[in-house]
Length: 40
Image (cartoon, rainbow, N blue to C red; front, side, top):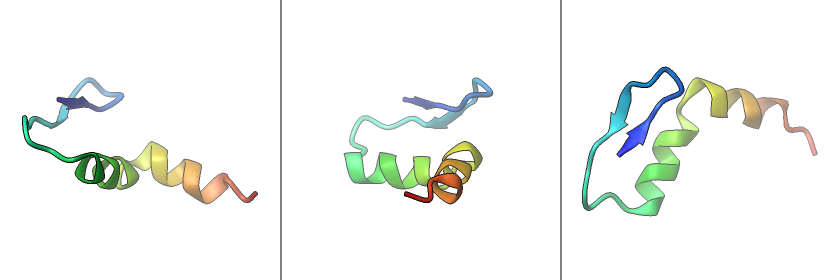
């Protein structure tokens, strides 16, 4: 189960792969902001 910062369930799956989970996380606003602001 993947929960958002707002407490809402974003993913509920027994068979989700790590790739699926990370792809979903990358679409979340907080993560998008992190990727945009991380100018290494």
